Length: 115
Length: 112
View 1 (cartoon, rainbow over the protein chains, first blue to last red):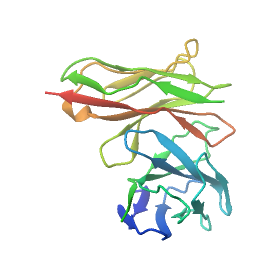
View 2: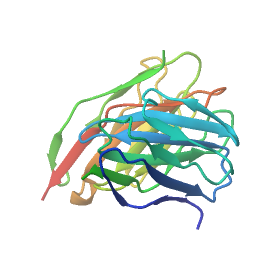
View 3: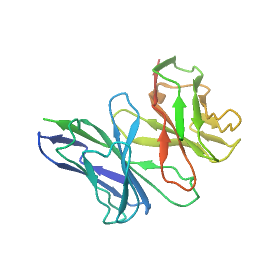
View 4: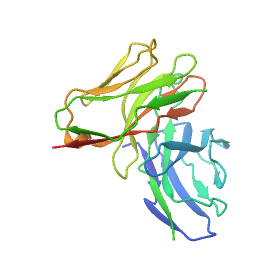
């Protein structure tokens, strides 16, 4: 079945450490996204990418970095500059077909905690 | 800019009660509208969508009608079940761009 795979499901970071969250999709979607969700809150956009080797900052990009070397993959690195990284991270993708009528498809998320 | 406003929760209903979760939007042009559902510890799942005015999206007993005159996309279900307990998000996107705009989510708890 096609879908989006996020790994790991749970991740722990020590102070001063960078960690990378994986997101892989086999839906052949062009656009991919990273969101952060805090308890009881909505989604905030971190980064998004519309094509390989190109990405744009979202509303809360500070302290995060991404790469898009392959269409299927859009890893997110949470750097030590992100002072409050504890959150639930969601990856999504979307087809470019249909002139803006296509939904985003989401992975099951990675929960990041600070040790 | 584009935005979505949905009713604040939490909402608590008895099983078999009628559900309405209000959603209004601000957007230029003709956005596509979506409802997503999120169960605890999981990602968002698409519940239903509507891509033009007067379209009705429906799935699993849930319905929402795209009302351009009132810029609304309210979610309804005639008889909720305990298994409907989740957080519901309203969202929009417009052609020509890839950004989505989400509401803040409405938590629903259905009690037996």
